[in-house]
Image (cartoon, rainbow, N blue to C red; front, side):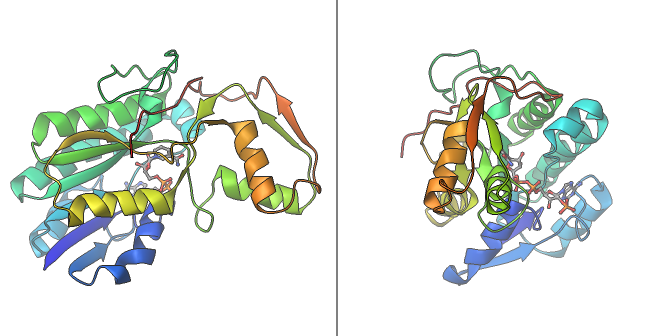
Length: 261
Ligand SMILES: NC(=O)c1ccc[n+]([C@@H]2O[C@H](COP(=O)([O-])OP(=O)(O)OC[C@H]3O[C@@H](n4cnc5c(N)ncnc54)[C@H](OP(=O)(O)O)[C@@H]3O)[C@@H](O)[C@H]2O)c1
């Protein structure tokens, strides 16, 4: 039986993975919340890896607050870079394949076409920079890894995300002013979960950087509209386009990752 360690188990992706494990009885999944395994604590990481032989580690742990990362970058670098370096070293030591989740925000958004895995990253905010640093450590330390970049991740059920925020506001009848100045591919955590698990069950050995999205290019405004339509709420609220949605951290204008199914 293959054993899989999942860090950051209480995040929206971690929870999506927890919801499907009954479909994979030939695999043992060990889920660790941030309390059970703080990836910045190297002693804890070592204790967990020495307690069981893990064939795979899916790293869902990350500092994902883009606005806060801009104001307090240290914590973002600690979790998204330094801890990832230690996790990669531990995976190397214990012969564990690391599946690490990264982001469209490693790119600057200036490209006119979708970003491929061969494009050179150039992040424009601290979150993106910290995630890129984590990627680089993995590439330097490990041979057997997947860095899976995804974009505009949301879960209809878990966590705090754009999908759920729009739905909550719409249900309360609040007016929505949503920017149409960025494009990206909203990605459902359930689909990303299936992709991650398929890499494992197919014993994929083509290691390296991968892009995964739901492959539909939308603006945030388009995405909000889709959410309203899918939930029969489009007549209940006023949805308006805005050009400049003021945020502390810069966001790439083009966040589209090239991904071929
Ligand atoms: N959300 C997006 O739009 C998006 C887009 C592209 C890529 N990604 C990437 O996708 C991955 C999954 O994101 P997500 O949306 O599922 O994130 P999330 O919901 O914010 O979950 C992240 C999880 O990491 C945990 N965590 C934070 N610091 C930790 C630490 N030091 N040790 C262990 N766990 C720690 C958090 O714990 P607590 O529960 O205690 O807070 C949380 O459960 C991340 O790598 C993220 O960078 C996300």
